[in-house]
Length: 214
Image: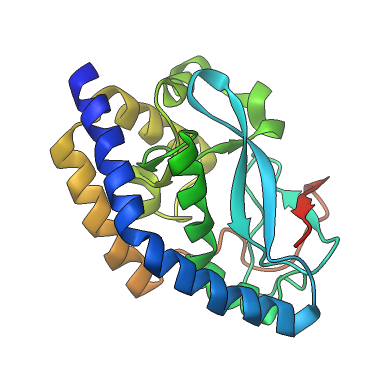
């Protein structure tokens, strides 16, 4: 298992280096689109839970209007609705196509994340994990992963955490290859994009996101 994690890190670095020209092109196109829409920052970062509970800054393309609050549902999931008024026009497109996640290549190169791994949880949810969910933090979080590829936002937080914990205890090359290719199918079909049906935030928890000025 230890040998595979070394190999996994090497594969991640190689794939990120190969993807860098495409990443730069996407950054230019998306960055210009974000700037043209409202003139605000291109990137935001948020505190996330990494391997062994290490807290790190995760990067994304900004998809929300400036100074919008980040809303969490009562179960700890991120509020995500099709009619969410906080999301910009560009933001809606990059969310539905998962282009907003591309910035996490930086996190992979820094060593905070893998290309494939469990979804990185918000620091606000740190005290909500049950004992049988905590194995999720045995491995680095990923840009995509088992739950993102196969379920996206179609299952509850509890089930996501259990499946992520299962992944952390069963990670192997074949499984990662399956997840890698399944991710493209899921993104292409745009299934289970939204967690919430409508913009009803009466029972949600609001927290601020940190915007990177650019």
